[in-house]
Image 1 (cartoon, one colour):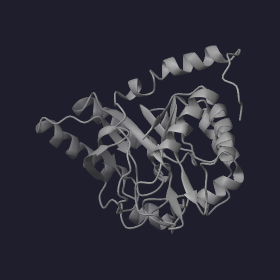
Image 2: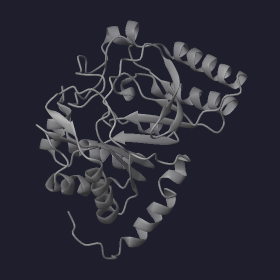
Image 3: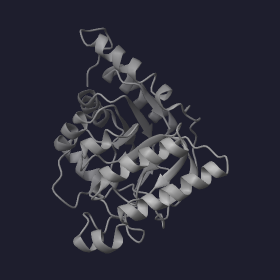
Image 4: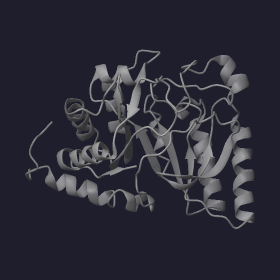
Length: 293
């Protein structure tokens, strides 16, 4: 990791990047909340296509959209800290696509009915967020769903942002670039740490993830830090991670720690002081806005 905060020929680019992010939170219109130590809580799988709206730390009052099966997690990663537990299925099979994954028509109908209800009740939301029971870009028909979501958003909730929470594995660039807020998981700076944290079922490499993220416009990174059996919050790990953040050039980085029951009970959350230190390192050494959640 670079150890100097002096100005260089890249300082103008960093200032422009920060300006474009409108100090990170100006872009989303959401002010970060004070961070404290919370009781860990368990997250059950979402049983329907649409859920909420729920009050979220990152996106405010958000309507959640689940494009994946309701009875199991479907994800290309198997993260040791996942709120939904261990991954049993890493890719959609033909059976998943036909019987378990909802159809585009079912998704559109569910979203339309909910947005119409919110509008009828005079309620406004800050975001409509695709955050599935696993990795949402595994849904086989993402582009038409997002295109329809944009139309329905414009009709019923024109001030809401369209957002996605993704691990960046299957980068569907055209679909992702239709969204207003793209929050991509990235919390390892080396291949070794990437595999320790994410326990991959299939051959996926951090270098490919970085290359893909660099190709998507105006993304945010969400980066979770833990300690214990696996630690990605030590200075060496942070240094390698910040080098990758600098390569990706996101609009901003969201730094946080555990807020749910653990998949692996031999890891623990890190302190607020550590998170604040990490955010400072991102601002100083990557020239990217960073906030603690």
